[in-house]
Length: 182
Image 1: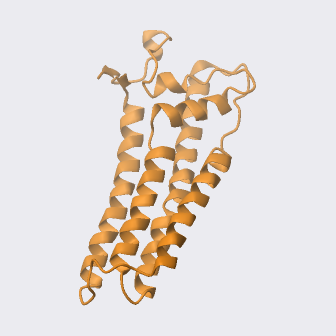
Image 2 (image 1 turned 180 degrees about the horizontal axis):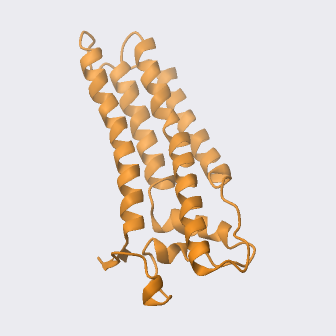
């Protein structure tokens, strides 16, 4: 696998946003200090979080690439690459926003339940982080799925190459900056 600046930048963005969900747990630690932190929340709330996670996964699988449009055949390599990266980043942010909703709803729920708010958030955060790793983290799977949509009408996107999941096939002058073997 090759690591490119494009891959690093996108992973840094998503990783820092995922870290914010962990920081919300710290906020709850301070805010819910009078509560028994490891108290179990009511079962319906926990089941609700898990159902929300399952529904969110279905939405992400069905609509997570709705913002991506196929490239117009005949684009230059540079234009196709620029458009591909823009579509991938946009789709990644949309998928992130959808996947984090479970954690944010759990965060709000932590203040509503009488006991177990911290555990409720930990469950919701865990569900969201799992969804984020599966659907938003720039991986071979997420890049390939985006590339398939981009190339649906026959244009080449070079997205797998730009993100370092396939060797670069263009001229060296077209090569993304700082591609290193890792």
